[in-house]
Length: 537
Image (cartoon, rainbow, N blue to C red; front, side, top):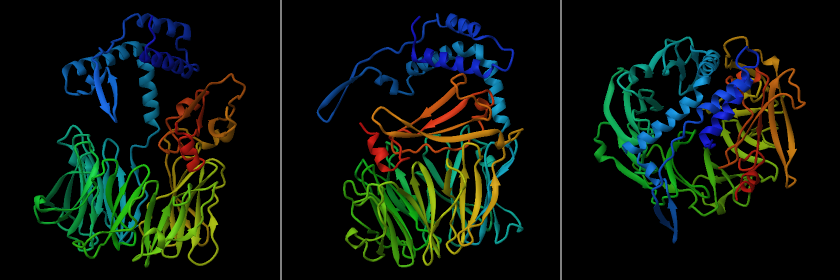
């Protein structure tokens, strides 16, 4: 019998499913494996080889399976159907158990759910799901949560005519009167922007196809900026649209001609500037325009340079810039809003070898920094006047992050918190008194009790002497003597950090005697930018 990748996957899953069944009177592993091997006598479908030479940078390589790129070709479709049928046949002896596991996992998810409202420009915004519905309902309330609820979008209604539907990118005009949103009906992440009059409830005739879905309002309540994609779905052009005019008359305000760069637009929290960001793996560049002058000219903050990365936010008459300029783990700089090139940057937070500066949130009286040290993100509250402090969460292994904070003049920081034993929780944190207010802990339906589970964090020394952090969770009573199974997960690439978060799906393993562990291997940024760089090559 030939062991193919599909066969290996089925063997692994069969052993996993059998392990999960050990508290029931299901078949013994010998019976299960015997049944599976018998089915493996059926030959697996094998894709034919059609040599195609691909040439780039003076180098030729042969791809024998390039023909499988032709997604509309019937032969490709037939091969994929054959692979699916082969997998279904091999897995058929587990179908009842897969169904029961799925129902068990789904049963922990609350069907009626609602987001924690956040306030912006005089309104509280709410997202809710209702049992039996697949899509969210977006609404808002004026000034107080006791006010009458105003429907923005019921995506369940919008989705009715389509086999696939996704709505996103909701953005309300500064006047609070017009809603822009984007819809994808193809599952290709190609969005059409539409507009709704929130005073009348009627749709506005304007619509903009082939966008990334984001809409940025100028302060005149009539002009929006949006991003379009090229044939490779790369965001590469920014356009300006004025409501009531044809899309054919929209003005291209930026074209990213370098195919290694992507482009997008956003508005600063101060509401003063429209920003165009252009970025790739090793470089970034920003342009700004006063949001009161939408037909004006964008100006560059700092021209792009290879290996120079930066991002920005605006406060009063300054730009605050997070950059890797002479700082592998990034540092924070400040510059006058009218003199923005790097020779004008002044240091606010210095570079540290053991701390990665990840992001920043600016408020009227506070600067909040997200910093990662020894694999864990710490939130640093720095008043413009007075002593700074780090928020104490009382655990060693967790994920904490700043959440929706659109209000500028507030002492409350909206933050999210989760650990491998604690469901995702939303807090308001008073940056002056240091008091937490729990607004919501994600409900796990059923008899879940987080006190029944234990998490821990430790370091493993690997072959070259480096110490790799590992986060692990298990149900209390788990024996760490090699007699119980562990599912070990690791991913290291693109600087993507694997944080120790909670998963209700994972409970199906833990309740059956598994431990689940995340090895925070190099390639991510758990231990700083060096951790990412060391993961290359």
